[in-house]
Amino acid sequence: MRKIFTLMFCMVFISMQAQVTFVIDSQPSNTPAGDNIYIAGSFNGWNPGDTNYMLHKNANDKWEITLEGFSNGDVIEYKFTRGNWPSVEKGANGEEIANRTFSFGNGETVLVTVEMWADNPPEPSIVSDNVMVMADDFYMPQLNRYRRISLYLPPDYGTSNKNYPVLYMHDGQNLFDSSLAFAGEWKVDDTLDELADQGYQVPIVVGIDNSQYRAEEYLGFPGGDGDAYIDFIVETLKPFIDSNYRTLSDRDNTGIMGSSFGGVISLYGALKYQNVFSKAGLFSPAYWAKTDVLNNYLIQTGFQHDIRFYQNAGENEGQQYIGPMNDMDNNLNTQGFQNVSSKVISGGGHNEATWASDFEAAYLWLFNPVINSVRDDLKVRKLIISPNPVRNVLKINVGDRFDGGYAVITNIAGKGKSKTYEGVCNELDVSSLVPGVYVIRLEVNGSAFAGRFVKM
Image 1 (spheres, helix red, strand yellow):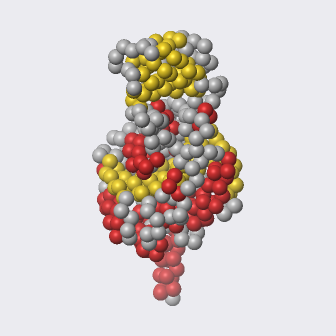
Image 2 (image 1 turned 45 degrees about the vertical axis):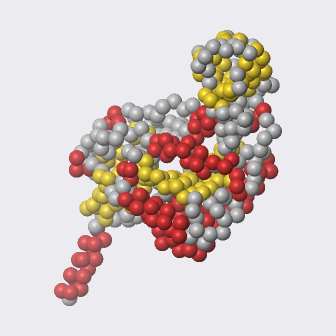
């Protein structure tokens, strides 16, 4: 009888013990580096700066805290702060959010996304005119889901008959528009616009939004949602893009890129479809999540076609990211892939700001064979123009005074025809242009220049 009573007591005691670990999986990119994060809730009198409830960084450089001593069925309410109520978390648009709730017994680990801090709103969103939402609800038959798809079109897309390379990117919310980003913006459109101004060929970028199924779609392979997601890109999305936009559809002009879990699925997709992708950008790839699976799959598929792989990891991400990146470099080389670039970004972390800082270098390296200048016989240099924005007269600076130049001005949104000017000197009357964003290309004395300005 005593043994039965003791066993029943232990079972009741165990059933009463419940805990939860909250992990902040994503936070605003402008979170001050030196600030701590706290959890405040019904369990601590809603104290926003209670040191007993301060989160700590885990091995993955994520903020986390474990709450213990609760019973199954207990329900708590909570929010996250940076130590006081003026810094409490907010919604994606700065709005108040309802208290978070958790019922013990429904799981032991909760991944949390903090959209914004009350005292630290994001910078105003500036999106290029050549970024568009292709579809808010593009159907993914392989997954029976719908997804928003965004496009970046090169600045001269509307004024040329050219075909363009294509780069497919994951986490589409974070590529172009900080107001939509859940953790900061890559500034893909800004970077490519600047490269286009310098005369480089830039690609069409296809941004595929993530969803609540992000982990399943980026890590669920082989045989799961990850396979279906990559099949969707290759079998459904790419044929649609190639049919409706002026693309260079061959593998030499097709790339795939992503960060963290998105870097993992980019590597897997490039290996699975070596006949489709010739370049893969792997930013802070979370190889630790699928190390054995990826290595086995690499051996299984082997080298079928040459692929350029660009890997990076932030210095502050530590060996959990840097070590596996270097191991993958060696493993790819062993299988015959010789075009592999691996880089540790000085001072970099696991965030969009770090990835944005390296996007230009990655693009130029990955697409090196196809990023010819606008004119092969002229090296295009950056044109210094002022004022910018301009109302009437645009001042042009190429280093020396000149006359007799030839200029072409194009509205990047395709509004109206391009205007040509002959006999251009250091000033140009643009008062007749309608308001908008323009690219100017100037040839003078055997040299070529390009710049970008806003007409008010």
